[in-house]
Image (cartoon, rainbow, N blue to C red; front, side, top):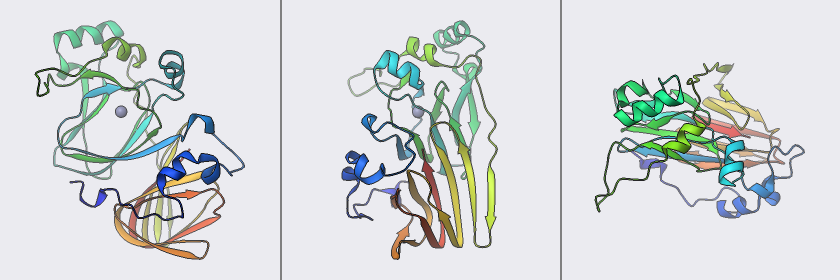
Length: 278
Ligand SMILES: [Zn+2]
């Protein structure tokens, strides 16, 4: 399914992404209000994940646990916009155990159907997956993930799969139980929708670590840029991006950073973007 989402080397600014990545101060940190510590590296990641098979069931720690136990600056909260999926595709999103003890007992019995909360998905669905949430992306689902810049992962279940040498992947049950919420928390999301004459801007989530929007451009939208930076990914269609008198063609599969110092951006065309900032 990845198709148009394969990374392209086409730079929008005079620096390619790795230079922006390491030069956080030069590219992105001119903002008046810094909400992350530049010495800890770039705070957000955007990924396209295309699951050909069920991905392992896992959970991530919060910042406090990540710093104390793993000695890394960030835990991991993440969120998923479903770009495309097969019919009846499912994710794992939460669990049904009421305590650590019953969670462990169900894992040891292999009572996965009883333990894991499965949710059917369709294109356009959005899920906020805070640290401490048991989760997995199912087969046949393509998502755009926005996440804290961390990859500390505790794997709970890998469907008993074995690699070419007959080995199963390592599981981290004790750490997983230490960081999982009991009982499970499923916070309802309230989208904020702003309709303009030629576009719709939906705020999908505003949370401690990131705010994520869906921009549905049906002709033209203009957005003020008052954030330290914005990450943008074109997930459908094509158009033109205008910034400070320059115009750039954009199309599905393009990803770009709008740095601080830009006051306003305009997009013309018929396209959808997922946009985020810290
Ligand atoms: Zn995850």
